[in-house]
Image 1 (cartoon, rainbow, N blue to C red):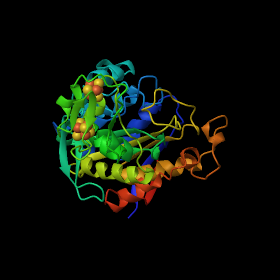
Image 2: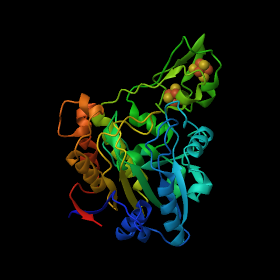
Image 3: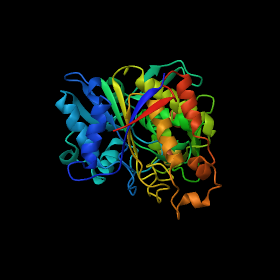
Image 4: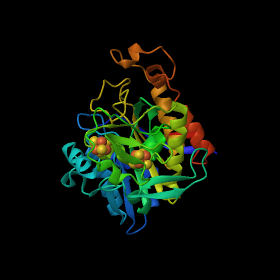
Length: 365
Ligand code: SF4
Ligand code: SF4
């Protein structure tokens, strides 16, 4: 059966600004039906890397926060720490970046909680039946929340073609170790020329896989690929190998999404902002020109259908000149033209896992 995906375009006028239209959209899609009185409600959002400007405006999050509170829920904004060493690799840097990007309490009217804690070690192993994983490491705040609303900026992605709800939830709420599992099939390596033999990584390694012999060395047979050492090293001497096949990483993201949503049946809701459709993820510290004009906002209770609908809308839209698309090969899938990656693999695997359907009915309000 086709899933319902609600859609509102970007036209606005007096008495119907975009915040009002977002609220109307979410009411039409019955967002607050997932919330019971006193529920702790995680609003998963990407706060944007420092220097990025394409992430969702905090005022949109504020409108959702107010709707959740009106229903008696207790909302908090959340994301998990990054694997790469950028401006969001631990909770302190992450919160500083979020506030610099406008997600202050005074604006969003809710606390910010980093889902996997101060340094990415606060996660829960959730058992799943996947092709790649039998358990996934999910930030504990996401698991403990009673309900989840994902606010997703839909855009291109250098590793998965595009990033939508599945990417926002699966990769986004995976702990740092989870991100290592998704991003790489290859275990970390020490760059001996950068290592100062401080031993910090040894204390952090849960598998006792690191020892010092002039510089740090990793025993590959002991290493469990958790990724803790990569962000522990202040010298950036431990390399993450980002080489995972695009198809595999997409399937892994779908399996992590399965883990996040496992205890949220009937308690999750998804909103995609198909605006500022940049070629790359909001994890990069820049925002290249959007490849299509702003399309609209979508809302659904089906995480697969909403991404399929968003992708179809982008692919139907007129390409903008003077953007990265001009350098593409003219593929009808705009993200494939840019990244040479078929992003529909994540949709197919998610559907196979039972997360939702690619068949949808688009209801314009
Ligand atoms: S933390 Fe970094 S610099 Fe220190 S021993 Fe480990 S790899 Fe070397
Ligand atoms: S990836 Fe994890 S197990 Fe492997 S060396 Fe680093 S900290 Fe240890």
